[in-house]
Length: 227
Image (cartoon, rainbow, N blue to C red; front, side, top):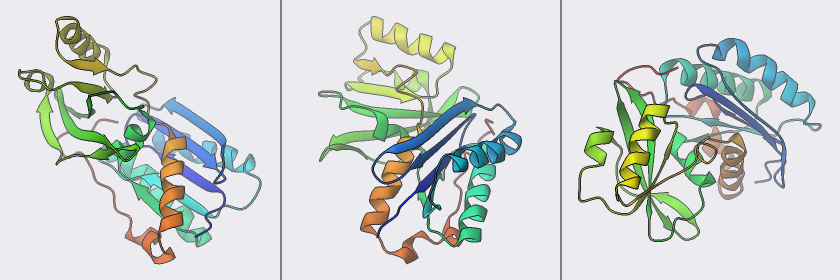
């Protein structure tokens, strides 16, 4: 399936990430921290991005969660509406897969992606590097940093939208000899360019009926909303 120009939207947490990708390169990309202003900030930035895209949109991609109720609902609803209005396919990608795609292999390390679930808890997802990419390994778990850092702990690269306190706790554990490697804040930013690349690959491999906008649903973090 030839996907052409694709718009990717990720508003699953407190950041909004947008990208335009023509199947060969990222044409435009923008990320910013939105706090609770997703509904006001997303539409004008999408309009601005589309003026840079040139050809008509042929497809869209959206981060479908897990994520906060506020951010995820707005992004998924906006993507579904725009895709349905233009009669173009919409590819839904999990929040963790987007972040994992940006991270290089860590020799002899697994990957642990953390998404804030409020009250100092996290949705933890584990990945292993296989066949040239990070692939999910097991189910998500709801946990906290103290539980994750209890020995024995396998060599692990940790990434996610972590606040200063969480980063400090993980850095101290690393300095004390814990076998973890903390990804930098830049590598922990979910970039919509990677969301777009995942979507292009799925469009090439799938059939048009696989990407009906009406079938896309959001998966919320139910424990507590994190804008």
